[in-house]
Length: 323
Length: 162
Image (cartoon, rainbow over all chains, first blue to last red; front, side, top):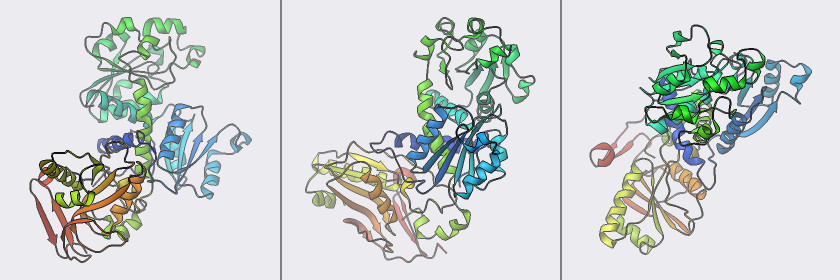
């Protein structure tokens, strides 16, 4: 018996370690689908999925769209600009109108923390959180977990340090939940002004200097420094940030063991990460992108369909394992 | 069965054995070994997981675990022999045929099963059959193979399914 995921995927905080493992294990065979001559399986044929992106996104939106199309779902993209949202329509009204057109799933990206949960509680369709404010970005953390497992063969006991703007990062939050649930050791490292107070309560260690992080970790997950943070006065300047926290070749050369460097993108080369690191042998940044499609296929596949009331009827011969 | 497969294919040229996850994969492997002993040729083998092509995905409760799919190159022009443990409703084979079509255009596809238990719901028949067993819908046919289960055994349990 597998651990079902429920109706929505809002964040990793609420998933059990078994549910997280189920998603990672399900993603494994989906990697192969993207290598086929015909990159498509009929698993979600007839399902309609709306990608509701209220915030700019390239990688995540395209990755979801590929995942949906490779599962044969029909997809519609809605961006905040150019839609009725600009005319003042509320989130729930937008979603209810979409639902009236008989959709099955909504993938939502929104600037407000809690938007995905809010929507999931109000519509019948499955809701997948593609990033909500500073709350969570579960599929990003799942693809990070899958990439770590691919590279190191395990997650339990692996030392992972998140470097950068922890305060504003939903990627950091989802990673901390996912990693700690699967038994990794987690540290965070960044400027004092970008470190949430009480972060230790989530079971992570705070490292003040990036050199300490490099000495301690097996994996560095370098977070994007959003340029708006400088304008808001969290850091003095981008150059200063790079000088103190930049992950550079010179710093990595002092690592006592083989180090894997990840980045959720989009990268600011020369701010949080040195170009030579991003393109160098430590980097698995493009593997993360490849794994993103497989993980999202797994999530959509696990959430979709499976009407429980029909399950019994289907437990005839065709559902048996030996036909 | 290995002999029957060679006869069916008129030799081993272009022959590809494709096992359906999970027991079919082991059976395909065994047939390949027997053919190798007899003919001195190791024919290419593949594994196929048909879960994502099932026609009841919208209705099954907990999602089935998906196994590995790995095919030995392009199937165009090959003679693909699908190998499975039990042939029953034919729905698994239907799914396998659909899936194989996405990997090229074999010149011929045949079906080889260890047990044919009757009860077809689709117009599908096997080309090579190990044993025919008459069963009803309440019966369960369980195939065990040494590689996965520690022993080779076929059980027919009458009235096991309600």
